[in-house]
Length: 109
Length: 116
Image (cartoon, rainbow over the protein chains, first blue to last red):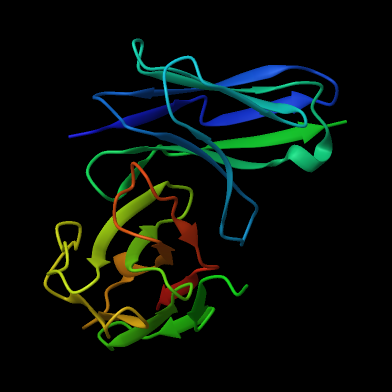
């Protein structure tokens, strides 16, 4: 049974700083997803990582996947306030997605 | 095109009452999923429909929870005799087909259920 763990669960970072969110998973996952959720809103898909070594970037966010280490990272570069949200990673166990508990990111001036 | 829609957006109910939550998937999506998100938590899988196949109910927490889907369209999640621990946001998602390794899931805005 796939288990997904994220850390940290809470992250307060200053504007302009860099940081990384980590997502570990327990067994093989065919894909690894990253989602963003704003308060009171649904999930917005950020990245889909398909294979070992995959790296995707969108603006100040970059996601990578290491299937051998069963680890995905979401790297934030030069954080801005607009990035404040909760970020979830999810793997594919069987058919439904298995989600981590989320990382609540707060970017402060 | 239109995304996944859910109704109501908010529902407050008294303990012991039954509630029905509705999900309209993206047109043409054969797979439909229900998830529950408790406050400050990740999403928990509840149930999954794929075409005319028998639904995967493995995530339903108790027999008070049930769901139906009419063909490849609307789904209704029913919670009977609601309890306070049922308070959560219930999210619906749909995908072109039921293979999460191939087809991305698109999420609706959710229904926030509060049981008083």
